[in-house]
Length: 202
Image 1 (cartoon, rainbow, N blue to C red):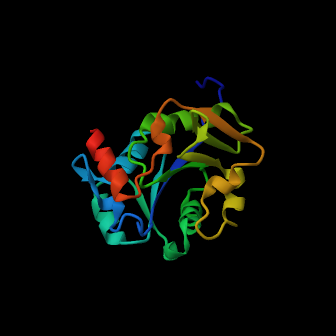
Image 2 (cartoon, rainbow, N blue to C red; image 1 turned 90 degrees about the horizontal axis):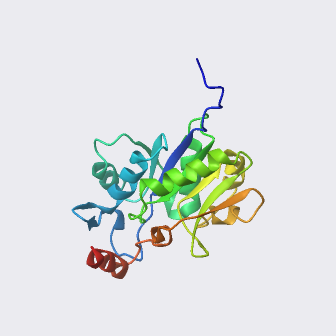
Image 3 (tube, rainbow, N blue to C red; image 1 turned 45 degrees about the horizontal axis):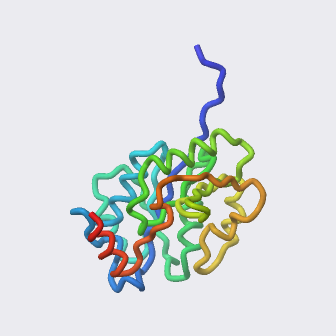
């Protein structure tokens, strides 16, 4: 016997982990943080959330990325065009999503402090607002990441190029901003100084 309520939308997690880490000087996703590679923190947050499936887009040093995720229930998606910018990883990930996915939470591999509660809050807001094309976290008036893209925006995302991420898509209609208390949505770790500061804060 069913409750008569519609099933919640299927929302996948898309972890972008293909970049060359040029500002870090070495592969930042493999940098140790609290005893394990930075990327593991991001992927484990996705796996602990309501998002499913979890896809990880690889490009630079794909073998190293794959090895760091061994044993985790993720699907690796190769992006041979990663050197052309972030947009190529977003497009590769979107193309690999199951047709049942009503949306995708796009996570950046260098934001290890974002936890499952933030991801789940985005999914809950998307489910509660059927007209939303996207959900963006906002902390103290600033937009952050990850963002949830609804399927209505996938076609527009496929027209992005270069190093443009999804942010360009988030100024149109149907974009819901979600206030969050967690400042982690504003912090990416893309320089040695940022990594040292995060380690020092532990």
